[in-house]
Image 1: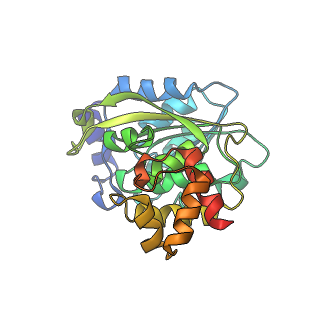
Image 2 (image 1 turned 120 degrees about the vertical axis):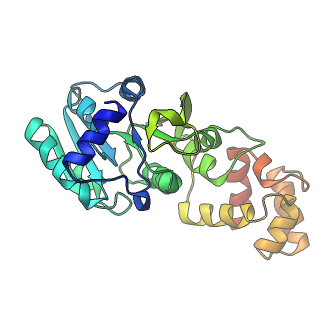
Length: 274
């Protein structure tokens, strides 16, 4: 679907890109194919698509998958979804907020993959939701802002809360960069296809995820500060306790939050909670 075809489609349904929902529609057929190929969709796969929009990616998914469930937040897209439902027997849709929709229940007892072209402003929340879901997908392929994809794939030395929350549960890979010119309207930044292969078995053992991420957020609130100051100021630990905790976790007091590896974070938080 090129820009002219997209504009004609939007005109037919009386639609315009809605910036409230962060709508920038992908009009590059090669990139659409790259997304589906990266997800390795087969006739045995169940797929969760977040933000189908005008349905250009949806059609490719329905042509390959066993079942596609698309969650669309914008009710104005309902006529397009109804049209897709007529064309594909393996297509289901819900007009809902993906952040609160109970998709694990929909796929209960079944494996599923996530494929999505999601608005930039909710990327972090959606990835964290998927990675911490009780019934996780086997893989996630999303088209997102290039800087976000690079952030997720970062190594120790440049880690963020988002990178840690993804890498705890899966292996991220930046598949390719996508030019802003591949979208209508054209966004101000380039995008990237990000793939996450979700671990079948947990590689890291976290006793209490809520406490883990609570400590993580407190520490990253002082990202530029040395870890001993962050622990003292943000977690209100006394200097002696901080010294004992860091020594037990084998972490240098002058290290900064982004420099710690995931195993170091797990060890550190275990010592804090202990």
